[in-house]
Image 1 (tube, rainbow, N blue to C red):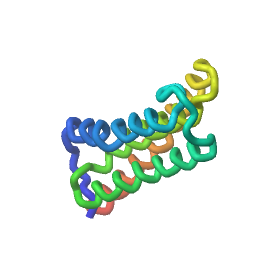
Image 2 (spheres, helix red, strand yellow):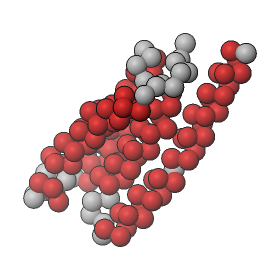
Image 3 (cartoon, rainbow, N blue to C red):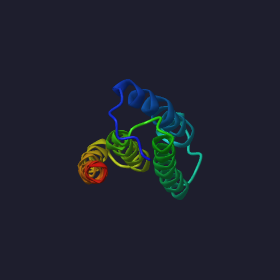
Amino acid sequence: MINMKKNDGWLNALFSLVFIATPALIIFYFFLPSWSGFERVSYGTIWGIAIGFIFYVILLSVILIRFEILSIESLNFNIPISIVLVIILVSYPLALWATAIFVIIGILLAFPVNMLVNKYKESKIKQKK
């Protein structure tokens, strides 16, 4: 059964820092020419890394939700944060203003994720009653 209780925000913040932000910073350092100073990989490889990063975050979140370490509400924060980090990663050759526009679009994509998570929670609560 998936944990429906509300957990502390510090656990979500710790998860995001350790398992989302830290790997993203490592990826930025080793694969982005603007951070490391020289071109190391192709743009196609950057896209592959970005897609893999999204799957990594979703899979890890689902596993920790399944083992009741995180609550389902953590998806409201983890998936949008990872989407924004991936947008920053794949938009590195663009101008700063274009990257900012794509980040804003990524933030707006968070609304459907939040709505799906909330509908899932509501359906589980109704099943319990």
